[in-house]
Image 1: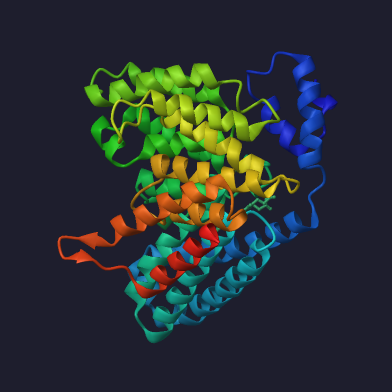
Image 2: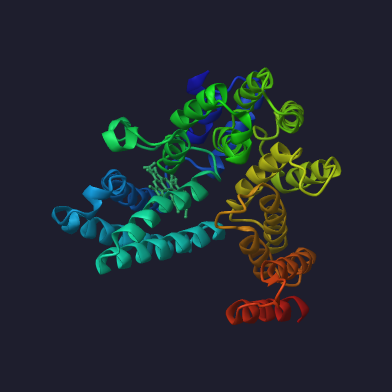
Length: 396
Ligand code: HEC
């Protein structure tokens, strides 16, 4: 069976237990082929830049985890030269991401700014600021890597995780690094172990680990049955608080219902729209996370839809608008919010479309809320100018 399809994306799904039907397999292989066969020139370039980034990161991180080592003058030259390499790679990545999905460009830019700051701090001798920020860089890597299916191409790096400093990391920090370095299978194992053994389940809720796990297992690995198994095991914990039990139960129902959606190809946009509509109908209150799994599935479909270069402008705008909505419901509020970005991208993709109008309303309201407090409203000039430009585009 494995030999039917040579496509690298396809192999990802062969491992899952959901694929029983050979006709479905052939259908999938046909549609996947148009998405990715041999790595394109762009992909080769992405991987080259990534290789540079991660080799510097894995040289720097163990040093950064040990204050003495990081401050030691004998390491200064090495740290500076790795930071310079990272800065250059991040800059060329910004130029490179201009060629594909815009939300990558957004994260790439944020990462390039972070790395420039880290280099700047370190050069000035502010090692502790630099060290702190360096450990945050991984969040950018995670932000991109959690979006799309894993082509199963990342290098193994067992040695890195055995390094004495790295081995001392807390479980949540370790899993974050595993995702940053695309060791997805290892990350899933770490998470699953954590769900079994973490003493206080409320903390799992507070740390947002379950949602992150679900994004990787569903969106990146496409393995809904594994997600279901994990949630079933979690349900059996007798110390699970009531509010978590309610969520986990809802997520299990969604997984069973949506199992086929990630595997099916075609009509991603309209399917995503339907999944979102149904899930919103089921929310009891605005912050209700009962529909979390549905929104992850929908955003996975939308990310995939945006890879197709033949999309009409209106459909691109609609996809971004819907991604803005899903992101506002599943994103990590504390971190690099992509919601504003998605709404803006919807407007710029097709300013005259209905989606652009809806996206503008959502964006304006969000910006006002983000910049208001008991002292009134204080929107920074550059944000206000950008908003006015978008307003004109939508109205013109
Ligand atoms: C702007 C989005 C983005 C950011 C930020 C990003 N990556 Fe990636 N990365 C990708 C994409 C897309 C791929 C998949 C390339 C492929 O296999 O086609 C990838 C692949 C990789 C790979 C596998 C390369 C291979 O040969 O298969 C590694 C390792 C990697 N990234 C490390 C990192 C590290 C470390 C960081 C942070 C310092 C990072 N990436 C930041 C988008 C990003």
